[in-house]
Image (tube, rainbow, N blue to C red; front, side):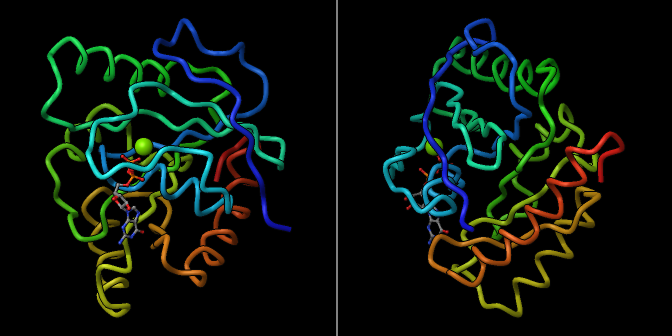
Length: 199
Ligand SMILES: Nc1nc2c(ncn2[C@@H]2O[C@H](COP(=O)(O)OP(=O)(O)O)[C@@H](O)[C@H]2O)c(=O)[nH]1
Ligand SMILES: [Mg+2]
């Protein structure tokens, strides 16, 4: 059965987050990579998260209860240049503070633009959050922008470049087939991520 999600709350600081309860999966990725679109599409609900043409809009961590008993947390995007230094600091504190200090964090859904494997902001954050961790599931967003043969090529390029434990999963909000593929991968990965040993 398709999963559903329900918005709970937003927090601008780690100290304002809800008390740890359910196991959490967070959504990490560059500003404008398609995090909000992914949420809305995966849960078949366009009112969950705001999608915008202009990057740098989400400045909070947004919490969603999912029907499988987990909590998903949509983090603000990183790598958006046109914000003040103070705001940039707050956002990176929020992202790295959450990823390194949240006791119930069980896994990271990490989105990349399938067309740009070497993006500087992604490399930078990969110095702070270890892509080799088996609890990272890499997702290659906007896969409709390239042909399906190039998709498989990009999966290998990303895997080699970052050294991911899991094979990256192509995704597109324009493809039912890729949504189904991701649903399967998520279920497998989730089982392992929620077990003691990890995948
Ligand atoms: N072609 C295409 N565009 C997408 C896809 N996902 C997101 N977008 C577009 O990318 C832009 C940023 O999306 P958004 O979800 O707000 O990114 P966020 O900043 O990471 O939350 C919007 O214009 C979306 O319509 C996708 O799978 N395919
Ligand atoms: Mg967003």
